[in-house]
Image 1 (tube, rainbow, N blue to C red):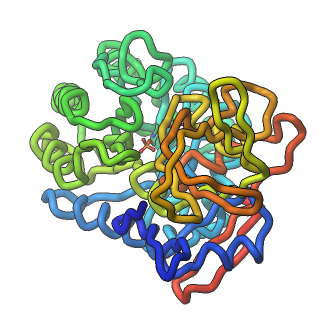
Image 2: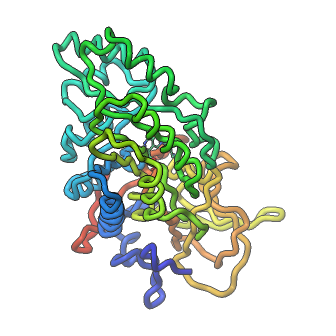
Image 3: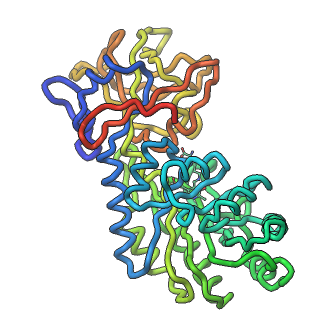
Length: 405
Ligand code: LLP
């Protein structure tokens, strides 16, 4: 049970994540915890940037903070030149504090409050990506009050069906996100909406954990045609995030294929650069969720490994039925079927059902891979449990506690 591509290996009977002996780690820090590798994060970010730069347009990669807003993670990405895609006042302030310049921040979301719009204006961010006519009116009013001009981009709803979990598909007529093409064109014509706003771009984001590129290509063609139709010079086209990762070794479009799809579908010429908003692709594989065994039990037809991490700490398995690969701290060829469950009082508090797994006992531990995105950022204190700690292996191989987020 190793995944060298994810830095998960066994050496001398000890489970490791890149340069870190996980047995040492759990002696030093309380579990459950998130462990991030700075090296893996930088590698993912650089890979994405290099691919983005290879398609013949200027580009800016704005990391979607919702995937992982940990300050150390953001500082690392800021140093590599990434911008940020934020969706709240909290994320905007966190991005700025971590050193992401306002000129590289886009603000998305259907429900921006007036105070959040004010803050975005005060900080003079790259763009507020608007999702309704009402929002545009509010921004224009607020900008007028401040005697400023707001940079805005329309988020288009391209009405495509992005095949992914239904909770994270966002680009069809059923979804609350974005605006229709005709509404955007009509808004552009209403001069009174633009006294204190400047249209700087168009954006689209059709969903997350997208494994193939069919819907992405369709959506990008629609946004490219819209750019051509409005025929105004734009600073950018923002193609959103959404590129999937291979949680279980399944086939997923590569970053290179994704960039080829962008280059092929975005044929408009009246924009200066392409903005990308990846979250998962940058952060997921750089993190593990580490949890210790409390006890095992058998009941009727099932065997359970009960661990100290629960669905409050790591929600993806119970919320989306996500199957993250699980690695035990001990190797054995003697496998039995176990369900791996947490302490939270819900049947959904389950990381894997009937998984062939070695026999573990108290204080053994296991790790879930690809936990660097939408892990800690979705944790809660349900059941009044504490939040999990976050630990970073820095470039020197040192272990640093980087909690709180
Ligand atoms: N841009 C916008 C406007 C978004 O709404 C999102 C994600 C992203 C970018 C980043 O998407 P990514 O590259 O990470 O796929 N909690 C869910 C994922 C929710 C994604 C929400 N929006 C999960 O754990 O799968």
